Image (cartoon, rainbow, N blue to C red; front, side, top):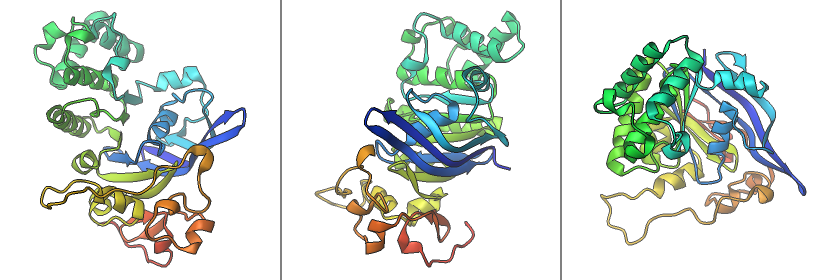
Length: 326
């Protein structure tokens, strides 16, 4: 059974001139212990998907359709207080900038203890011991001393480790990680990715990893969902999507990655830009930028179709038989 199921999710932002649709019929699931990467350009809808799942959509954003199920229980219609009890205990969150996740006026230990006691029946001594163990588990040196330090006394990489410790405090079943390595040096990125993978294995947690970096996806994830203009363009096993992209947009993303084995003066790029929410084209939203556009692409929007071991929302695969994932 899937740990998380997102079914036909629609997120809208009403405004005085109408309604903007940021997510349009997005569906995917994540199994226990699995890392699902969600990738795409800025504006594709990655962070809004994560915010909808953890119940932190910025007003006037709202879930206008579809369902979100956690362990078979629907959570998309819950009130603020009900969702607050789920956040932290059953769903952990890791955000891009650790400074926005940590209170600069409290020691990291106090923040960890407060989180632990909110969700678990622990006294002060038990909570402090568990907080120290979490800091040690996430690679913070000398955790017995560092627990009383403030966020500004940690480096960027160490702050992100503290945020990961906070996300894991109540041993949630699902972790939503929104660009957790973007603000870090490349060498620290690799450490954080290794840490996330190890912790997921140890705790059996599922992870939704939101990023724009295909290198991070390749290194970390089991499956990947490629988003474009608020819709899933392709989804499948990460090695299949990366090595045999079935959607022209995915192929463009892969071609844009620099290859050190080739001597080129210019990098490949996808012509054009992601459409604005108030100007999404009819049919396939990618058709104005696609090198393989057909007449049908401009008129009809494709659903996810079987494309070998993956599924792609592209008319090129209308008559291609689906095969079992490798």
